[in-house]
Length: 317
Image (cartoon, rainbow, N blue to C red; front, side, top):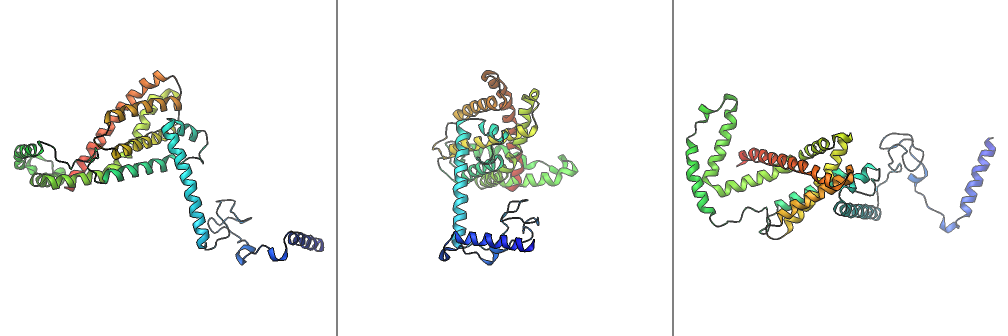
């Protein structure tokens, strides 16, 4: 038995060598000849060049410069193709990304959470950049602004006599004193304090906007409660809807002038109605009517979140 096994192995080696000339035999390094007993990543038993448990290569070596460049280029081209395919489907067919993800076709598109984070990052990056034509830029002085500031300072000067120690509860006094100092700095130099307030507001806003996702998912779950869908499906739909919103807002920031704000709101409403019809089914008119309470509720939550962020940003003045 041992002799037959060795004979079979020798015959197999001779057949493999006969397929290549002697000067074209494939060269194998020392690391290629022997597989490690266990995967370096998950310690699972190794049976081939890739781990059957985690999928990582089992033959680990330091890549050459050519291999590193090839891997980077391959990753970039693959990601770029998926990104453009995802953005095109996001814009051209509302709700289709959600249905594709729920149907299991996920490898060809960027996943919902990375897509949302990427587009939100681009929007807030553009929003933080100073631009004279940006509709979100509040650094431009408009006619009558100086008079209004003087009038407001005169009216708010009476607030400096407000006795915090007498009017505030004991547990609220440290916070009230902090806010009073911030308001005094706002009265002293409105321009500098306004810039500090804007910077603090924009720094906190991205984290607060993230909480709009579960609120939007709850609104759609309430509107379609008879469909008995899982909450995570509504959350997935919310990710795609907010990704589209950030994409539109990024385009709006890049546009000169104040931008078509009213047109963007109508576009958001129409996109929401079409997306609801594609994801949840039904006729178009009922979906338009259902989208109204979702849109109104989402707007109220958005206003509440922005006011909360503004209040939290005041101590940064």
